[in-house]
Length: 108
Image 1: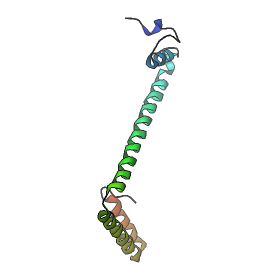
Image 2 (image 1 turned 60 degrees about the horizontal axis):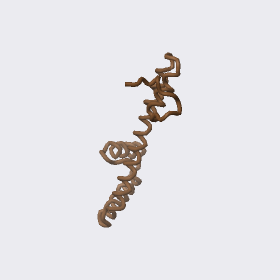
Image 3 (image 1 turned 90 degrees about the horizontal axis):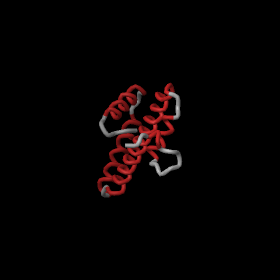
């Protein structure tokens, strides 16, 4: 088996091998920072994919929900905000908002 150090830059190596070669060329004291950079990069990619999937799911739900169900949701939201607007005290409005925010799957 050939060691990574035996590969010459520019030869027929894989990107992974080239990355490992670059890491080996750095002083040992910088390896923890490089590791952190690689981990943050991977987490960033994961978060982007998750955000994309959530956005795609939301768009699909909007596009594939039947008209009656969409109208029902709109009516319920309108009634909720109308009743909330009728509350006299700011404290009551804040309590209502907290209840709404505590409901699973609801965001404002």
